Length: 251
Image (cartoon, rainbow, N blue to C red; front, side, top):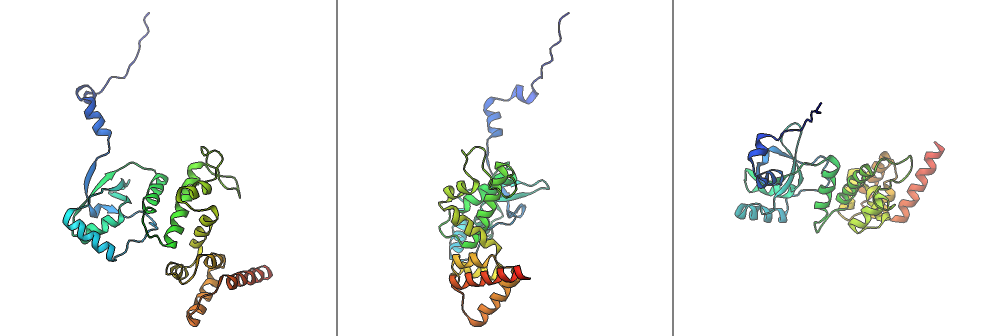
């Protein structure tokens, strides 16, 4: 008795469409998407400011349109999420455009974070706070992609020949592991002190030491700095941190 062989039949669309048409359907294309349908990336670490550069970009968009498409992904609840192109979106809004050209790409959360950070790190001027939160977001995404590490261990990416995620990140952005660690520590600062780092009133090294203080003590120190109109040196901050640690242990 002959054995029945079941084979999946091609759909009518496959039967009557050309290979070129099928390739075009899978290829990414540029779409004009209404600005109101695009939301910002959650916790976007890079500031989009209304400055002279933005005014120039808005004027360019007004005359010539957006020449480089933004990158977005579809949201499950509808609409789109901006991955790369926040400044172009703002410039389009200032130029009173209704739509912006976008590439729509299917991305996981971690893939979206990596692309968002990498595309913004190409900018010429990046604030310490922007690097701090961007490096933290990217490092967390890299750790998740490498697999969850054991307790108190630094994760090692599975396909990176034993390199840690922090080592790889440092190589990618041209920073040492220690500098990556310093920047990420800045995310533990209260916002007013982090703003002082961005403005150059406090250097990164003393700011890193301040980040180890509890938020309440940072607030007290901020009040003192504002009252005295001064900022502590690295040596003074080390003394403050040491004194604080002794008080915590004695409490």
